Image 1: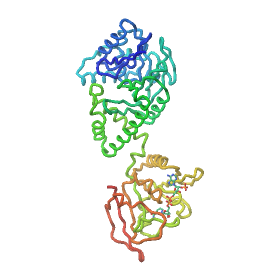
Image 2: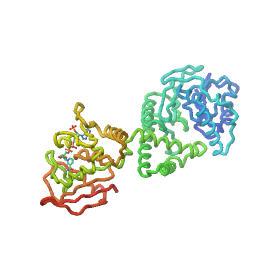
Image 3: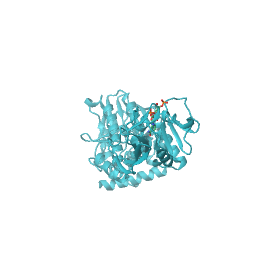
Image 4: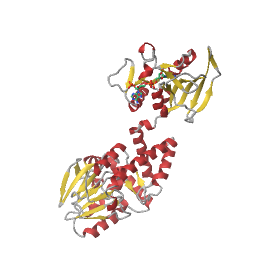
Length: 457
Ligand SMILES: NC(=O)c1ccc[n+]([C@@H]2O[C@H](COP(=O)([O-])OP(=O)(O)OC[C@H]3O[C@@H](n4cnc5c(N)ncnc54)[C@H](OP(=O)(O)O)[C@@H]3O)[C@@H](O)[C@H]2O)c1
């Protein structure tokens, strides 16, 4: 079997698998269709093109089909059932037409818009794990959801793997384009799934064959690049809370070295915005900010001893009640046990963490992990029309520590005394938090204390 890059313009977009039957992997951009079909003709002469295997339904992979059908009318187009469905929708076909025109204009190349949309449709819709015989080739199709929900990779004759963009797109040097538009976790899973097949040749989408020397390590490389890109994107989203600014920074990091003919800026922005949405959906814990924390600490940031508070100060209790009334309060089971009568605090949405699966309290939401707690908080916020700043982390030590990354404000009653203690708050000053407001010095019998409001700097 011989594999030839027949992209026509640029490279890495369309591949011809030659044999008794000739298969095309992808059909490329509209503006490259003439050059691509010439490249195919040079390879197969007057033999026919038997089939096109599409990895998904995006315009830069399917638009060349119209030209292919014009020259080889008997060709059969294969893709996932989901892609087959999408390519029947008038809206999708209209988008393909619009983006094809825009890409041609950006590349300064002409394209033929006089085609019938039906020429872009899929003849055979494949299921995940289905094998089809095309002439002398056996083609195994497997779903690689991540870039799109309709993405599919193929293995031809147990020898060649034709990968969808879901597993990642490599560029010149060490350039890499993350491509998990709709499902980051699906992309990780797709890389793991692909790694389980042993094949002689791996063709990466928008790239080409993986060098023999890299073949064994390629899946680890792609998984690492995928994870690194996730971290980089999350970090950009944290540094640039405005989405437009975040997109511009992502363009600089990921797209500045890409040939704009292959992916115009507009297409990059659409993809990056989709990845941002996916990250927010699949990793909500990375984006939560703005909870408040409330604690009474001594000079050493101690908070408790032998399951009890260090001091009971009425003005501190009053402040706690005022601040938290009507809000969501989040606590560990041990702090809950210090409440009067072992009951949730009234007038507030009590959320209690425990690892005990069979432990419950009437009138409180019980959670078993930080992740579950974040989800339950989101649900409570929605139900009660509350904001992140209406979420109060009320202790004890372990819960303060675990939820500190999600807090932006801390109300600290600072008691000017050193107690014998076994539980402590994180020393916020060592963590770089800054005092935004301080009360006058207060006294309660011989105790001196003040109310401080800290903000994350
Ligand atoms: N000064 C103050 O403002 C203040 C405020 C609150 C509390 N306190 C004091 O702090 C002390 C209690 O603190 P503490 O750290 O010992 O206990 P805590 O944080 O109140 O509760 C710890 C318990 O919470 C559960 N938990 C914590 N993280 C979890 C997670 N990620 N997943 C599932 N469960 C989780 C576990 O319950 P299970 O053991 O059931 O699994 C854990 O044993 C007491 O002395 C209390 O008086 C002081």
